[in-house]
Image (cartoon, rainbow, N blue to C red; front, side, top):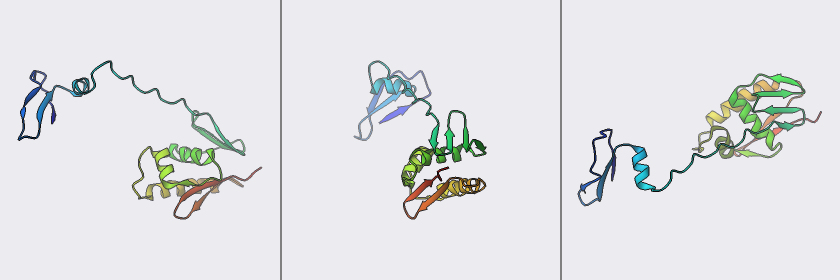
Amino acid sequence: MVCVSADVSVRERVVRRLDDLGPVVICADLAELRAMLFPGPPVPAPVPPPEPGPVRCGDLVVDPARHLVTWRGEPLALTRLERELLARLAGDPGSVWSYERIFGSVWGGTWLGDAAILHSAVKRLRRKLREVAGGPQVQTVRGVGYRLAVPRG
């Protein structure tokens, strides 16, 4: 059992056995706990991946670095979430993206079976794409996910 204490005066590390469950280890903070559990040089922080370049799909261009989406050269007013969702779908046009894959890629988490947040984001994205004449369409694959259909100019 480990106990992290804000009391920096704590010096004794192994206090006693607690009801035959094992030793109790007390440390001043999480850095000290890490040092105890993983002795040796500190592990360097992971290097973030490089910013992806523009995603091009026909006349659609999604540029994450510039926070810009254009259709036939005209900018589209999309939110960050809508841009990220569209970038994923445009990165592999025509392929079906499962709910799990989209959720993990766009939201960075594990999909727990409730697709309401995803459906809502797709609904808003579709509404904005409908305003663009001859623009891309987000298609539903029932019970599986979504795919992007981009008309060729």
